[in-house]
Image (cartoon, rainbow, N blue to C red):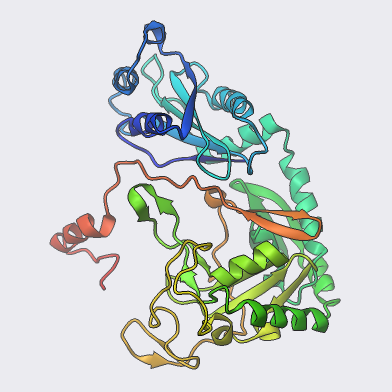
Length: 415
């Protein structure tokens, strides 16, 4: 189960966003609390809730972003709307919002049940509700409610990760990062963090001892090559950026790489492909995590990157399953041996057999946790579709870019 506090807003757009869901029969208003006499009226309009929240928020002129809009989501249908509502109520109390006016709206239009919470950060006394270490406390409160012992869970996940066979430290780190952890080397051990705080550690000696026992499963690799050859005509292996969907059929900034082939391998065979790249550029390598056999392989053990992402002549232009459009050839690889730089020059590719450095790898944060389940030797990724954008933000480059030029400040993007 995850909790996400959405971007701040100067207004209470979260009310309209959620009531629109209700109007379209994609959501259900589960609870309205602490709105005083407003709750005794019939046919209350969304604007009435907004006016009430704005009136209470006006008591603090120093609070620029009075709205708090959060989401609590479970995996699939593991929790009912009533259960999620009860959890949300307890979460509000734990975060200091139990006496605040708030709305709870259950959403049923995604694969994962989730409930939205909208309230104000300003109390009736005109003081702002404490938001220190808010994101960390959000998980502490939620885990306490659902009975998750963070330390105990981390120890179990470390033990599971050590059951895998891997040949480098980076590969072990990727197994844990795929579950939402981040790792940092310090004083001869890897500090393991999640929910914004340290949860455990593993010594280099223990990790290196496991590395020393690594042995490739040649038969399994041959089997995976045969699987790739069999399905490459049905699932496009071309790598594309994987942006998250936003309202209005817009897409967020790219958050990673994927392909129809990679998704099929994960869904059907429990084989996770992690592409390595940075700054929105084409990937320069990949790693294979075979969850069904608990093995981690380098790209060179299976096949070179250029071969792995080259589409078959029979693959479709767009994969409906991946829900992503196929990129241009220049965005990926111009030729198997060469790639284009931003300036247009051709350069030799990085060794796609190499793994990313610790600096190059982007660990999954608590904001976009990927939960990996180990059930009967297979794996499924759960990425809640709750990355919505209803804040008052403006495009940084489109608006602020020209302002930087006026002030003779360097731009963040000069292309």
